[in-house]
Length: 479
Image 1: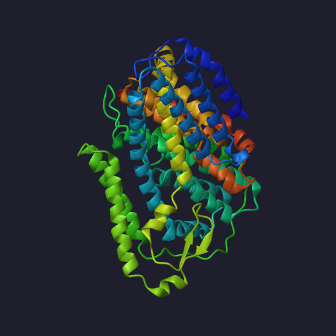
Image 2: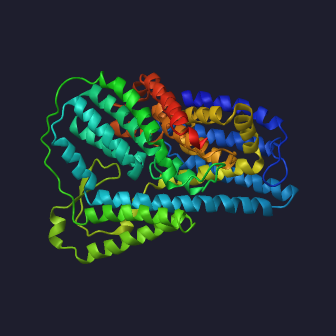
Image 3: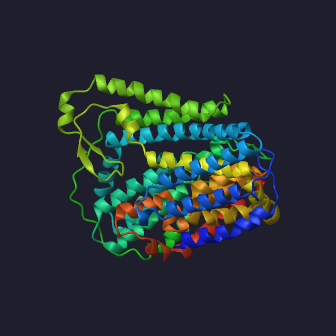
């Protein structure tokens, strides 16, 4: 309901945005025309449907793609009736190109994650943790820190699902411990994802945009300046939750599971793929997407090797995991890279397509120019970026960051890193503020809920503010 309230409030801001007669990207104003106002209204309705996904059970890609089609249809009709459709066509093709680069990048990362799951890497990690026989507090910190350091490589959503499966398979009956552990995992995955281009879709979007600021370029290694602020945003609320963890030790009877043949090779190729992407963008000045697509070929050749050397006896004992890393199923087939591609999270990829097209359409109409002047000129960059981060807890960080990137405000490197940090950790303020939180609520099935998370929002907000303060002090030279 909080998201619905905020979205209704945003509708009330439409007249204020429209009152300024700004020009769109095409050179003519659409912000005061009924087409522009209707497009904003449609986008907000789509956002409401996305934020209520858990309750209405409608996958988030459906309303967002529908809104994108309607918005660009309205733009096309208006352009055809007034100035011709060539400018609108070029703007749409630009948005499609922007999405294609990002989609291919994410698709390769998802394929590697699915390949590691099929080789039982995550299942092996889960059983390894189980056999440590930790106390509840020890397990709380172990899973939290593993999540924090794993999410920069696997992305926050996949890491949250993996570690959530660990907790739920180790201890389902202790409601209090499971709830606190799920909150801990959401915090750690979002915080860990904020200091790496691979940790979250928002950080990847910033890196892919190749933004050149007034003090430097947001390159691959720039994100690691956010490590300490991200760590603070996690440790502060986790420290408070530590004292609420119930006493006792974990008892486990689950057998140890070994990784399948080739698992270590795929992990090495994943690291090589990351290095290739960094080299292509940093040294060759080419899009990182071509680097990761080259990395996909590494996996294809290695998959060919695994398939040709596959022994039938392997299939008698092999297991793989479902996309949430929690269900073990029998798998007697040799490795097939295209099955790993097929198991990518297509709802997320299509949702991202809808977001980029919707935001691109609103930018073409001129609304983002209005919003940029309000936030970054009247409020100032620091206040704007902190407010945007807090808003991402309600609007989700992907649409929020997409709006910022389409505004293209003139900011220093420190400010670009600030908005990257706040949108990443801001989603932890509410359980519905990030894909990791929403997915884990579905996985936990009543053991981790919106209101259980809400109880710890004050502590999370304190960590959020201390994280921002740390960044402003630690990276002052970047501003």
